[in-house]
Amino acid sequence: MIKIGFLTFSMDIAEKVAEKFLKIKTHPPRVTISGPYVSNNEEENIVKTITIYEFSEDDEQEVNEYIKERYAKGFESIEGLKSRVEDWIDIEEAFKLLDGDFTINTLDAF
Image (cartoon, rainbow, N blue to C red; front, side, top):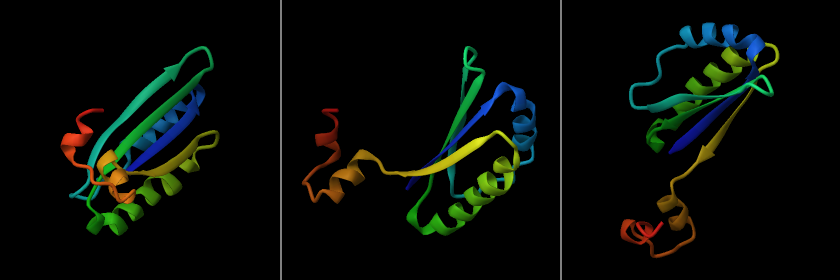
């Protein structure tokens, strides 16, 4: 399973966001985290981050609790910061939902 967390904030509060990152609780052991990745739009004075969380369905409850604490109790306490978390699936899982007869070899065409 995959969840992607997004943060958007102005450079004016970047230091507060950085302080929160330093205080984040360690993620559950069976979660693979990629990122956070950062994009800065200087013209608009906006910073965006994405963080990708990969985990098995068995760990979903623990991961949901971790993410809720990280975003709702952590970052959202910073005024002016917007966050959201989305559920994603990989393309093979999507094809399975369509009841297609797809395999990794079929997906190599992409």
